Image 1 (cartoon, rainbow, N blue to C red):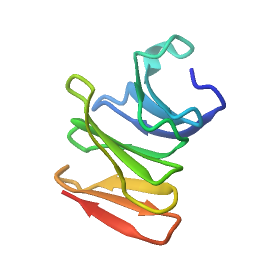
Image 2: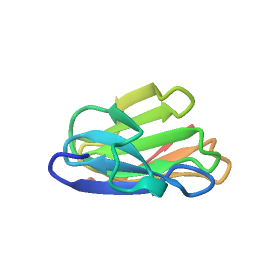
Image 3: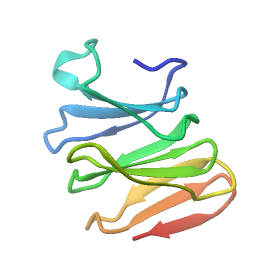
Amino acid sequence: GHLGGVSAISLASQDGMILVSGGRDGEVHFWDLTSIGSNSLKDLRASGAKIESITVSPDFKLLAAGDAMGTLSVWNLDGYKLLFSVIAHRLEVTAVAFTSSSLCLYSGSRDGTIQKWD
């Protein structure tokens, strides 16, 4: 599990049985909801800063996470490959959302800005 607590969650599968969580430890964990209390299915690490926001694209192919240092990280869920990690904002990335087509991602920050990623 996470060290220091969970700070963001999102469903990560079409059937709603996989949950993804981001933690104060800067890690992302995938959980099988049919066996709560078991070990995580997969663990990912972004910049190492606290995960502030997390989302999975509507087509369940991409995962985006924003952290306390303003970094936005995006993974391809087929193989859990990190596609990019970029300093997107001056302050925490407090919100991330994909469009319904999964082709565009928006990130919002405590610095008052919204960025578009496509």
